[in-house]
Image 1 (spheres, rainbow, N blue to C red):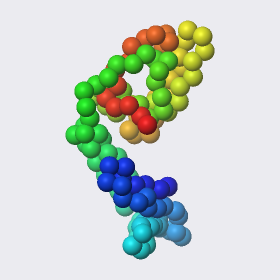
Image 2: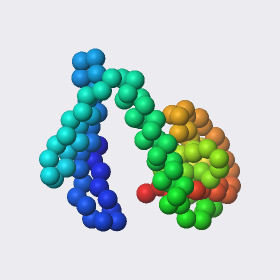
Image 3: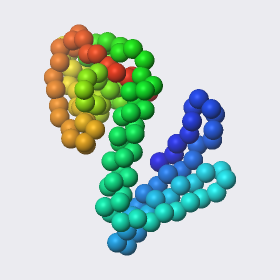
Length: 127
């Protein structure tokens, strides 16, 4: 996985996680060097949870006014407006019906069918 800051123009770096024997290795690579950390699986899960919560907070802080789109205009990465984060994982339109697969912040997925012209309010548009 690579990342970069589009707003500052900072070059993309590398972020990887992999099994390392009985631990989990997290490797970060940047233009200035590499860093490697090894932690227990429990710590890795704590980190993943903390990252997810921080991402939710960042989205809330940086979100503009909600936008409403037709169901057939949804795209992967769109986040539905509401109390809980629901992200579009996939969208398929067949005639007048749009099939949407949503994914929760906890990693659960489910499918919903909408009329293609149904209005869906989004907290944030995907890229």
